Length: 346
Image 1 (cartoon, one colour):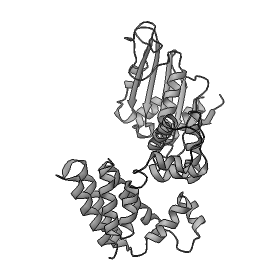
Image 2 (image 1 turned 90 degrees about the vertical axis):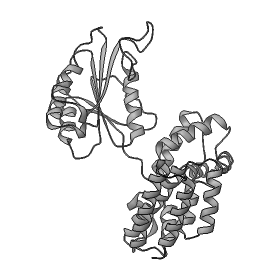
Image 3 (image 1 turned 135 degrees about the vertical axis):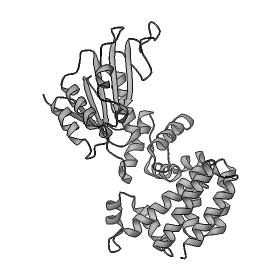
Image 4 (image 1 turned 180 degrees about the vertical axis):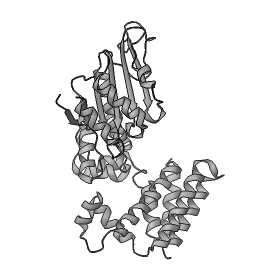
């Protein structure tokens, strides 16, 4: 049987219903959307948690939905999950992270994929890595439909993701608006998707840099990223001023430690790369936009490997403190910024 494969993007629909669908990739948002699209295309229109107890006339009635992680399955459990429903409806089984399955469960999944019982829809997610890769081969060879959710890492891919998100909402943005959105929100797809939803519902017209700046006034000027930039550059007074303003406008402390950690990781990645490479070549190798590489190269002046290691350790401690182990998150953040600035000259 021919293997059907497609790439999932922000608005991908799996297409025709198949008894077995494999969703491959590590991009959680896209994987989750692909799973929901399979459920929506099933005859029951089921969602996890819906079952035989749904109200009459409910489009989600008539289906049993089992959502399990492969590592939690014991040998033999799959046969119970895929047994006919007592109420005679469709039985949907979602097995997450099949790359984590034990050998016995992986074998059962492969066997099930080649002989799925009637009225059973099987959805399997897999990271796409080497672990249990033979399971992917066996399932696709048996005719399962494969949906790929590749990681969105490069600058151009993130720009395309934003365009797709806004297009789904019937909106458009120019390149300056997309870049401003990345600068203001960061690179996490869930955060970017939420930001697009907010902009689409709360603004009008073409979204450009000025629209983004107005919408994120305060946030765009005093985010964790601004705090991190000033700290990594060694400017203690400005970093502390940005920190106090960020906290005053409601920026969560955990977002600030996250920005500090991300900034240090970027410095470490750029610092470990070949110094002889051009900016564009290095940006391509690391999957970063050129402006980020150029900024990291400037910030690296004054940093040593020992200093970066000390700063990393301080941020890890501060992250634990702001998540509940410190009396004052503000004090913990002020302290870690001081340590980062001091570490820069080691």
